[in-house]
Length: 277
Image 1 (cartoon, rainbow, N blue to C red):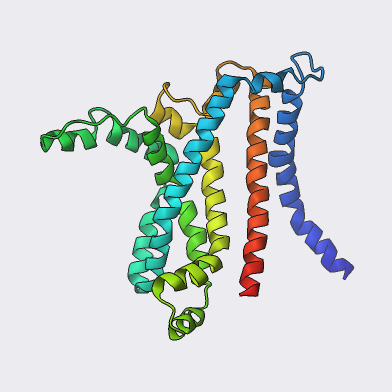
Image 2 (tube, helix red, strand yellow; image 1 turned 90 degrees about the horizontal axis):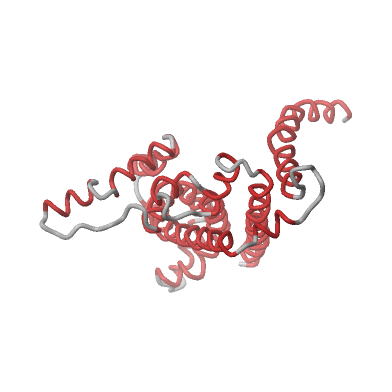
């Protein structure tokens, strides 16, 4: 018994070292710089400055675009995963790989590709011009940022949803049909409630990176649209104001922690509902 515990501690040691170096220490330095001034004295002035209206507007826009992107990813991913459950395995793998391709490519490259597509002289306006249709302004708009987020983060919604749907016992659905339930009623009363853990996990996996992104908004939004991630990145790299950057990061972490807490309670309720059903 003691030997097995010693072996477990030995295998856990590399992860413990990694967690301390890349999770605990960075969080400690963020908290330290956010709660101290340039002299190292404790202060709340950084947090007070971080809640000024210009930063709150950027945070509000970040939350809004992250929510919109999350909803769009859910609307696109759910029917896709349901279709993947029905088609043959060979075609399913091909379609699945097409949606996973963004994960295998550098997100900076894919975002720059969208920059080329959406810019004023980009592919979309070239096609519209060839069809004698009026050009559209997409680059440097919130819509462009949402498009980039959806493209980059859609696979993070597809993966947990597909796993959750694939774990639903087909006999339950067949029993519902035998008892006279239609497709919509079966989906509303059985399929969707049983897939809620995947929905919650997917929404979390999309919302958090969408909320904290700065590369997508920098390339597709330009300097006209600044999200909270862009401001934090500028405070650290351009203004060299680590105190304000850390304070803004602390406020952003509050939203992330709230999202995780909501996910935990939602998953608990979903599992309880699954057991009851």
